[in-house]
Amino acid sequence: MNIVVCVKQVPDTEAPIRIRPDGGGIEESGLNLIVNYYDEHATEAGLRLRERFGGTVTLLGVQPERAKEALRTGLAMGADEAILVWDPALVGADHLSVARVLAATIRTLPHDVVICGKLSTDDNAGIVGAALAEYLDLPQATAIAKLEVDSTGSSAVVHREVEGGVEVLGIRLPAVLTVERNLNEPRYPSLPGIMKAKRKEIKVMTLAALGLNPEEIKQASARTRMVKLAAPPKRKAGRMVEGDADGAVAALIAFLKDEAKVL
Amino acid sequence: MAQDIWVVIEHAGGSPKKISLELLGRARQLALNLGGKVVAFLPGSGVKAAASALGARGADIVYVVEHSLLATYTTEGYTAALSDAVRAEQPSVVLIGSTAQGRDLAPRVAARVGATLVTDCASVDVANGDLTVTRPMYTRKAIGTVALSGEGIRIAVVLPAVYPVPPAEATRTADVRTGQVALQPGRIRTTVKEVRAIARESVPLTEADIVVSGGRGLRGPENFALLDALAKTLGAAVGSSRPPVDSGWVPHDYEIGQTGKTVSPQVYLACGISGAPQHQAGMSGSRYIVAINKDPNAPIFQLADLGVVGDLFDILPKLTEAVKKFKAGGE
Image (cartoon, rainbow over all chains, first blue to last red; front, side, top):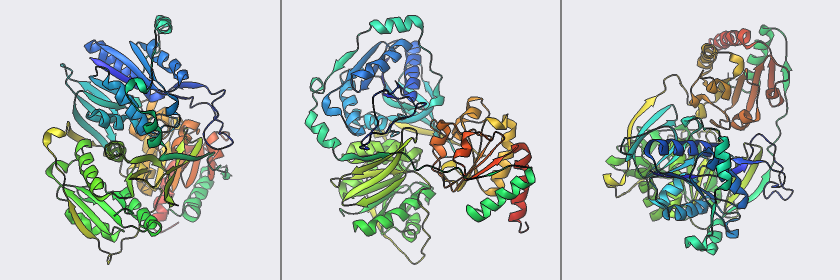
């Protein structure tokens, strides 16, 4: 089974960010970068399919050179190959353009299943997976919490959490799947895996090599602009109540009735 | 039609979901600025009867697309229906609710019709021809303002519970139009085998006006019954922070936070939740935050409008009784 996993490098969610004074984005210097949390689950899903069906897991990123480090993490987990696509024209690219670049790259690879995280924790958009499915003309199942592939590898049954329930969906392969965090528990890279990953060559591709026009990507992306990035409005700590349960309950009831007006 | 605002109506058997009504209300306000009509896009099978209710909530036109293959939501069926309709009618803005369905549908449609797309919107405005939205980013450590320029179709996926449901105006009516979609069964490559309802969730978490949420401080799965009882009397939904999910006390669909759901209810009542940044990412947009925790230094108190330092095992049963009593008319 030929498995492609899309991987994004993102700022560590545990660490603070610094917003640039011009409000155009965040300061990159000194930023601790990690593999997008959900993409680790996507990589794990790919590795498990390979363990069952054989084949290869190819990691794919559309980011600057620095993202090689994130791809190496996936290689250390056990992925076979990694490709990084980058071009200066992709600075500020919108999600749909990124999906288009991913699709163009995946078309050059054999692919029976394409796996992405359900979203990336930096911009929280969740656009790329489904858009990628459209550009590749493949069926999709987004935010899956369970994956069962049939013995021939030609179809799967997945679970999706929907409002108030779980949707059980049958899907033909090849397909694009985006994954939830409870799909699996990602493995830690092994020491031999880490050593092996260090020696692996990460293939770098440009837009031109994929037959994509950088100007078109820039123009398409320019329709979506980040106007401003700002710190969220600070919530102020409010009133504190201590003491016995009866006093607390009285304060809670008064708050729900008079301030929040929900009683 | 170029300045029209469309709202994709998500419904259960023709009965529109709360988020869809919220978006109709917002579309009505935006239409004042944009000058176009509000169009409710209603896909399904046997759903035409629902059209009049949408007029009462603010739609000028209800655009119905009926097909036997649209009876249940599938990505490819609904993508075809919505894409064909917006290609034909070229609305300026399409609003879609941020639900499992909306998040699945919107990127696919945007990619197909060449629209621009922004998701996870906590506000939507129209100014100087731009569609301008705000959205939480970097696990809510920042709020981004994003503008989609006026060329072409613009799709915004909007979070639930940020706009009020507009009142129903019985005298308001909408024109009903019927659209077509060419669908062959072979083009839909997924099959919905079943939707297993989770019965205990009386109010969907992301739609609830009040969310009662529990953390590590509940000490075990059995104690979520305390939250269930309180939620029942308040008409609230029950959620959790991440530790109870990781410990297997409650399923993942309870989880609020960076790796779970984002909620913005009128009141968020955090019980035994310390308030790690991961959790704050999913709830700090709530209108009011109330916290009960025995640790006076818990970070949750930094954002709580009312902080109660105390033992939730004492307080919660008494609070449930007090709410019951209040609702029964006494105090």
